[in-house]
Amino acid sequence: MSDSSRTVPPELLPSEDLHPLPMPVINLGHLSLDSATRYRVVDDVAKACRDLGYFQVINHGISQSVMDCALEAASDFFKLPNETKEKFASEDLRRPVRYDTSSKDSISMSRAFLKHYAHPLSEWIQYWPQQPPIYRKYMGKYASEVRMVALQLMEAIVEGLGLGKEYLNEKFHEGSQLLSVNCYAKASQSATTIGLAPHSDYGFLTILLTSCGGLEVVDPSSNIWTRVQQLPHALHVQIGDHMEVLSNGRMKTVVHRALLNPEEARISIASIHGFALHEKVTCAKELVDEENPPKYKESSFSDFLDHLTANMDNKHRNFLESLRM
Image (cartoon, rainbow, N blue to C red; front, side):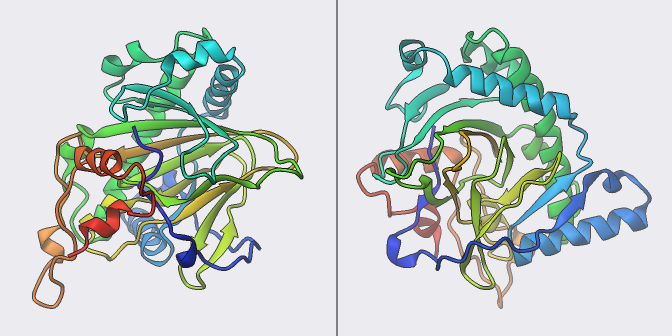
């Protein structure tokens, strides 16, 4: 399982201006109200995806206790003895569960992560850690509930693209869910402040839950880094590579990074949603015409894993660029 979709070459990195910019906040509960209200929310989601590629959601239906318990389970896992955690260590990106410390880009040196598949939960949970004892219960509950949020958002996004909310509905329901559970050390004056190097995610959507601040995204209008503010009970949502492909470039993947927090260690749980392993993602034919020919080749999650495996020593050869036509 992958670290990221693409690591961005240093010469293409944006300038440093870390003041937080206003972030769209979507009240997800309004999607289930009357049709006029739903239309406004869908329009707001579509605008955020087109203009920025990221937004936050509130009233998403996941209780604070479920979110807190997932973060607790993650924190307790990373507190286990190294020999317990390293039972899940592997160089095989296709392993159902994989643990590692830092990344091999020589930048992300203060991060430990545990990655595992989460849908169908009944199929994958048997491979998850049994220690700490709360892990499977608490993380499984959160995984199931955040997946329902992702499905609601996918309906709204494809509806906002003019494709109708039922577009590819079955494939989204049968699709993959990858949880990337991360622990970033507290920043120290003698170490780098980068917890995770700039990259984008391979899937359609990433939904992020964090214990404290540290995420930064590139603002596309100014090409500068901006901090993502930590709103109470909100989840951060961002577009991935395969959404850029499906939309034929109308929506852009989000380049982001993690900085170490100077006050405390940081836990994050990224839920990445895509098609099933071998299901190909193509530019929606409804968004292709003579003036807008297809801009990307078709690809699958399996193709992405093959790309990563073939380019282990060339982190700057990113996946999305390999798809451009």
